[in-house]
Image 1 (cartoon, rainbow, N blue to C red):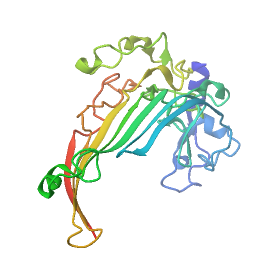
Image 2: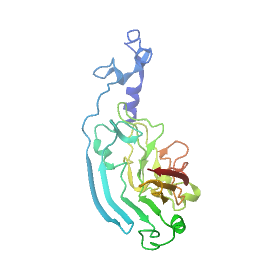
Image 3: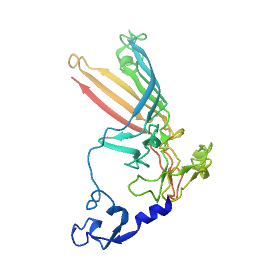
Length: 308
């Protein structure tokens, strides 16, 4: 296989030299790859068009919802999704991305079954809890309905709001730097010679893989054995909460229905650090390293609103 590919990659005299003058084309040079001359239309380097509808996808999921409607100043909504998505391509907009944004063609166009794997956007678990709670102090509330006006202005009209979201991570997709694929084939993927595992202490070492040696570079022009995505090892998931505290001041003495509100809002309230996924490109020099954070530190903002 390697010898045949080398033969078709050899440079030979170019019959199009002087005929094709486009400076952006390689077809006007003195030599040309032998495989270019065997194509049905050798005077063209490539053809672009809409992605053909040849992909398949399968999704199975369990969706649960538990809701408490507003009563006594309290309401909440809890949702949970257990799911699994399998496909042979994951789309991004109008493009067909066979390996996310890393490859736009299949590794072996004669065997698209090699692309069948867990979807790159698959998240096994998704849990979300949101709530609104008006604290039970002040006029019209459980306690303090007859409190003096100055106490009402201090203790009444408080409201807590929040949303908490936890999800499992996306699958790891392996790729290969400086691979040598068969001409007209997609980019090579690495070989996977065992089960790639996540290191237990990766947050301390920032080395995500416990046994990176099971991922190796294939010989030139060989098809890599790694699947398009790995279901057993995933990026760090989401664990985030945002919350807010509102205080409303009744200003009916000024005008009926008038109200002044101050609010303290927090994003990433628990200040949880969410790391991005590891470098999953073999041969890049930092394979397996976690080098960035995918969320921002806790943010606070104070605002005010006047209703009239």
